[in-house]
Length: 114
Image (cartoon, rainbow, N blue to C red; front, side, top):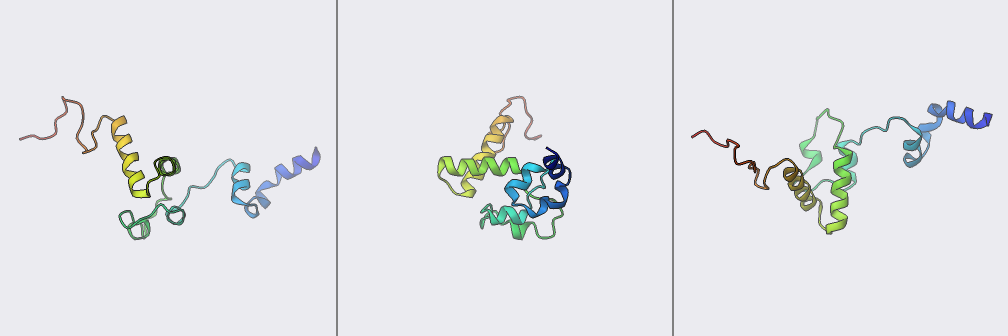
C-alpha cells in the first residue's frame, strides 16, 4: 500500500517517460493536440492544408472532440477527410438552424437589407 502511494505521489517525476496512452490516464490535464499532430494523423489534405494555413499560428491545435467526430464519420461513411469535414459541418449547421448553403432556416431571419 505504501509503495502504491509513493508511486502515485511522485508520478510527476516519471509520467513523461511513460507511453502517451498510459500517461494520459495518470494526468489530470492532457495537453491539447497540436496542428502538427493532427496533420500526422491524416487530418490534412490539399483542400485543408494545416501546415500551410497554420504556419506561425499560436493556437494550440484542432479541437479533439471535433477530430474524434470527424474520424468516426470517416470510419462509418468510408469517406476521406474532406468529405467527413463537410458532413460534420453540415450537421453543426443543422443543429444551429442553418441550411447546408449557410442560410438561416428561420423564416424571420434577415439575410439582406435591399
